[in-house]
Amino acid sequence: MRRATHDFLGLVRDAENPTRADDARVRQALRAAIAGGAAASVDPHALHNPGATTELPTALAGWGPKASLWGSKLSLIAACAAAALSTGDGPRASHPSTPLVAPAPLEQSSAESRRTASEPAPDARLGPGQTAPVVVPAPTPAALPVKRRSAPAARNGAAVQAVPSLGAELELLRRVQAALQRGDGETALRELDAQVTSDRTLLPERRAARILALCRTGRLDALRLARAEFVRDYPDSVQREAVERACANR
Amino acid sequence: MASSLVSSSEVAVEVTDRPPTLDSVYREHFQGVWRLLRRLGVPIAVLDDATQDVFLVVHRKLADFDPRAPLRSWVFAITVRVASEYRRRAARRRAECFDDVLPDPAPSPADLGELREEVQLLHQILGELDDDKRMVFVLSELEQLTVPEIAAVTGVNLNTVYSRLRAARKYFDAELHRRRAAARWTRATSWLGLSGGKPR
Image (cartoon, rainbow over all chains, first blue to last red; front, side, top):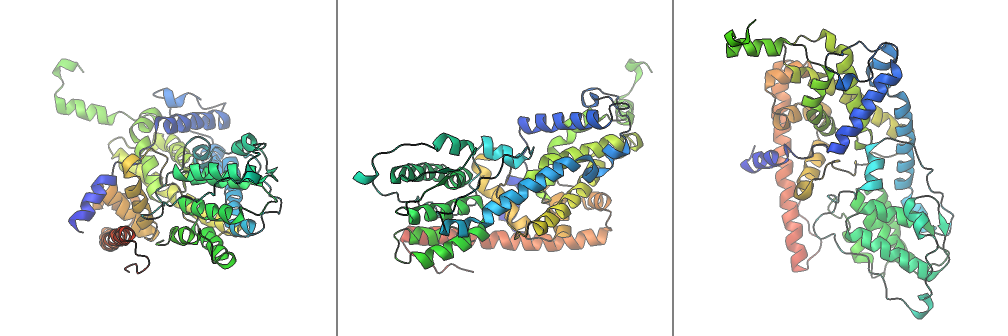
């Protein structure tokens, strides 16, 4: 291997360690699994109790599928919901007047849900030259009466709100743009999904923003579909260049 | 045994002969297990579950563990098996959802800071290796196990480990070089206001 490869591996070797929060969460889940599945025979504090190495009952300890069956089912639901969201971006963006249904809150313990809820998604998918923000037009007089009716609910992912106002749409795009500039594609997608508008004035901007967000979150298949539809529908859009540059080298 | 009469080597033997506890194994190996699962391709959405499963197996089998054997290899052997199971499940889940094989968007749960792009690149290239080559490459180049240790952990014979490692190193080296050259080219053309014409 080249010297540069050795250097690279040396650099990343000790990266991406879990955080203390990860440690605490897994430790707690492990204790709960031991306590919940083997209350009669296993010390629930075994993890903090040196010497407690009692055998787990087979139903609990027999490898992963048995030990975390319920968790796996929840993860499956979560993953399917996430997949539906990501692969459905293109068609949904093409028909923004169609009511969207936000995924029901999932009681998942997955790292993914925690990450999207509390931390910005890492933006490492964004390559050089792909940082162009969505160009949000200056507000027109018609767009000025802004009333953010659904923003709090949208940010909490609680429900999808119908927002007929162009001003609200503009506000939405500003929030999306801010999220993209922070590198937080997940939030940008959530914002876009959480509000539906019947006003099509800013539809190209909304679709362009979605494409940049898909790039930032690495959802390349959905991105390609949405990008192809965008170029087909808006061949002369000023957003076209930014859209075509999004993850172009991936 | 009077401690004042015990030589340092005897102390070492005494210490290593003491059976480990779940707590001590967890404290010593949690980070390594977490990292290894991630680098072996366990989706971040189920990383907690997979880590938990590793330590549940550790807990169940700890009584059978020979304290004179290398603990890390033993834990890693369990980790490798759990990772394989989770990768299989992830593949099945994608099929059930009729989803395409989407890349896992998050490179790591940790705060990667300036290393974010490098870690992302690492995962992209690892994701292109087949599972067997990825496993030996990760164990060798990232976890720094020796080839005999890898053979013990994976249950694969030495020659096969060497062969897979050679192939994986060759691919990783070439791919890293190619991607970095492409990134430099993109940066240069972007700065000059050019577009397209990416090098292959």
